[in-house]
Length: 380
Image (tube, rainbow, N blue to C red):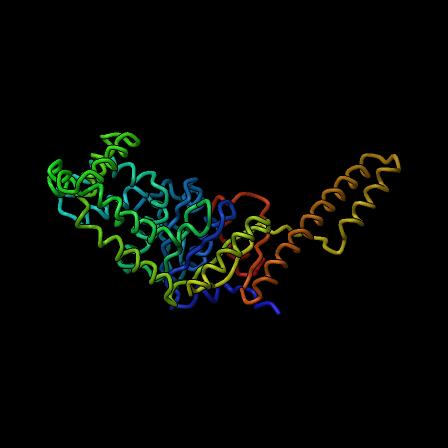
């Protein structure tokens, strides 16, 4: 027996729900879902900020904002008599990393780090930096305490599991033995240190110099040396963020589409959340195809189209035949999606699920986001 459908209105109205994390594979509608949930919560009276990591900037357009950046922006035309309001922001990965450096080091040390070429590369393009900075920004928003609900749109990643692992991965990297080894000459006075550690390290350093280049090693050594006082902070914040995600005030919403890869990724994510004892609210399956005439099956519609086409029919019948063909294809797609969703439900009978119909057009304004919100609440 499957669980009851996911009721997002109950979830959003619960004052103990302080963080909603929308996650899933790329291209399944996480950004739209995040914005629609945040808007619906604000309209219901909550004070909400939605954090998006989507590079397409669709959220700004839908919310009527000219731009989104690393600072929360108030969205006009949102709220209720109960005082609900909505802010929106888009993660600036490098700016967030810069803020961490500036907040946890002296002005002189932060200038050294920010100017370091290795740091500039790390903060802009290192694998996992975006996911880690999304969690850092979430921690910052929670610490500010200006909102009673934070909605997070997780990064579009190769794997939906990346953002859960990113804090630990980044902390391990920055606190790793390799970086400390590379930083050792800078800490101990350059060449004098190499005389102490012996031939083994000298050969190792020469090999790395051939592979990476002398300048890269110099940049890495200087970077780690300047960052030395911050090592513990990265690990502590990673652990604190991870624990924050596990607390009852957080609710994970896994977003999927009725496609094999997306549902497979959703299944992996549900298993991972359960294994890590993280609070899963449910799964949203976006872009589900439905027909206004479900009683007319695909085979029957196809057969009727064939009859009309065999009658050497006039234009009106040709149009009817074309409509029947479109309906038949829609019904076949719908049946396939139903089978895929049923397979997921059978594998996870305890997970609450909500299907959201595919929309006729793009989501480009608040009115369309409210339509999505109503569908998320089962009011379509």
